[in-house]
Length: 289
Image 1: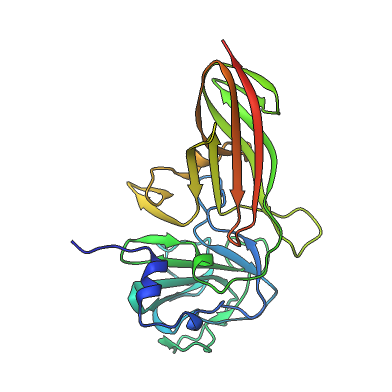
Image 2: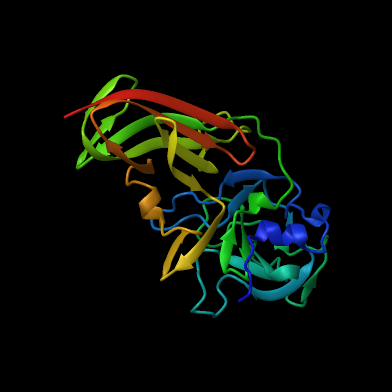
């Protein structure tokens, strides 16, 4: 049986220089992160803004497919607009979506590191000019978080934990230090996000990882490393968690389930972004019958 490695590991052991990996645009403004809630599915890539500009491959590769919006391909997804799929060494595949109509060269079949794939646009279901960038590990048929491969960008702003709540049955209670809750089994919910540091208004994005501990023991963890389609559902790779299992209807994140037994407990919620910035919230509470 062929051993399947995470894409990041494939790159590290491949005869490719890590310095060869590059952002597909010159001006990099991340506007949406991997794993964000898209109502009925996870965001399977990242969105990059920065204005209309040339899009280049993050590695040299060969053309797999190109599509110009409004061309006659009824079976193709319409939401991504004009897009190009490129195959790279070690079974890496990248997809460049929402390209400006008319900027994809129909004669090109291979791409060097500086060749233009197209121009960032707003074709398809788009709310403005941006690039939806996808990375796939073809060996494991996984969508991989592009931030695990691309050169790091400066980010000194930590994620935000705005509110923590506890869902017990059909009731949701805000969880504050010293709260008294009934015994049973509950789900910890949290309003958490990673802010953009380059704008002055609120622009919430999904964090990279969430850890939930109770009384010093980790009981749940969510990490947006990779996604995989299992039985027709897009789930976090290595789990059976689809978007509706991770995100509640009000936009809060389900961080894990806890057994609520009489006594005093300490809940610790830690949220991390991809740059390694962390925010923690410790909440002591009392459980009563």
